Length: 380
Length: 239
Image (cartoon, rainbow over all chains, first blue to last red):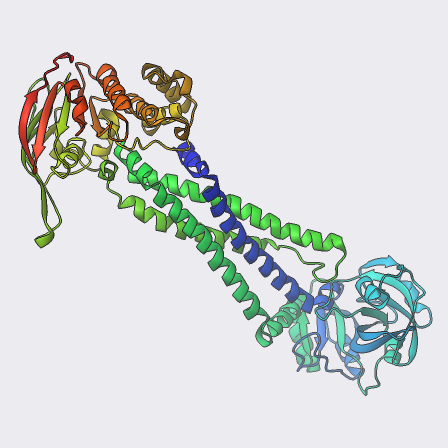
């Protein structure tokens, strides 16, 4: 009977493709918009994502996210180092600076000052140069997207000169980082060098990155650091989600994307549901004939659910494929706008549930008409 | 209620009402009728006289409001739900006025549908349906879609579909209504030639008086009642 259901479904190509299109369209909107939302949220935490060598992030007690920096006195570093269970702790500064090129163009940039000795927090993927080059006078490492912003259309090479806070900076390395939310260039330098580039402030220590001794429970250690230093200490995971939570709570981004995702669900559902309903309605006489010829309601339900599953799976596959293809295209085109975004499996699973709901609702609408259908209708 | 030998369908005092209260309509008002094996029985009468309601009850598609119906030796009261559905699938064949072929299936696939419903493997079902397609003279058109067939050809496919299950009761609803005179007569001749046999009863609802001479018995209905029952003038049918 599944073969019969398949033939009935695909017999009217226009309606068949209409239903598949509806489901695919819904899936595309849901998957793509949700993925962009997830990607944007990840971007808000790009610096946290890129620094994986530290177990614990220590910061001012009142800090609410990775950008809202409340600088601490240098002495806090020694307090953290003194906590039992801390193997090592290093300083990290993060600030916004105005970056100017020699031809006078300028933009805001994210300046990250790394521990002079260990370079803890340095970018993982170097395209040109090495971390050690930061020891050269005025040396900075610039991310590739930032490089393209500052030197559009020019060959990618080290040796370029920048100006920050009236201080000369030389690009000694080019790296790839997780694109930041603000799309500003990300500039890495030594901590001591960063102090020269930053506007002068009394306190300059943004974060303390700590590594736990082996066998230490990270959450217990975090609590211990907080208790003994009066600072906020969080594991990588906790800080990541604190940051995401801040942007979810304090911006309109989730509402905006939520509306689009909901529209995808409604529009996709409406197209698929209505077309599927019309398809069933037009085949009502055929379903009546099948009932007269001895097909039970249970088997008819099976046939309709089979048809719904087929269009659901096809529409979902096409929609998800189109979403993934879109991000792949963005990635390969070199555009920074949507670079580093993809369809996470969780989004794919949510889209699958949404598509499941769409096809179930569509089927239920249609099923009702078929189930209440009197087989005697075939004689009318 | 058991039917005497030779009687496929026996109806006694059958009534059928639709609706309630002031909207109540009495479609059948006490029908007594016998449908015999080995005959083609024509059920005739004006529109609205209750023909369709009566064959719906005879075919097990509608329940009577009152009265007794014996269907192929089974009391209709004992058949309900999935038992009735299975009974129909195994014993009753249908030919509809508008053919009701599935547009996306080829002619032979359409003819095989009742076998597929009974769970016969597709290849075997199509093989058996092909035999019927040859019998109704559509060997060359077996793989055409319904839209590629004329009305007469589609009705022949519908006849093949109705017979593929070897039903003991064949119910035909206005099989010539959508056909011109020539095609209608061809179809009726075909029904008479390939369907009527000793172990099968055939009921044809029609108001096409050009084919009355092909029936073995004619039951005329009017206003929900049987008006007359007569042996047709042409008695060449199988008895």
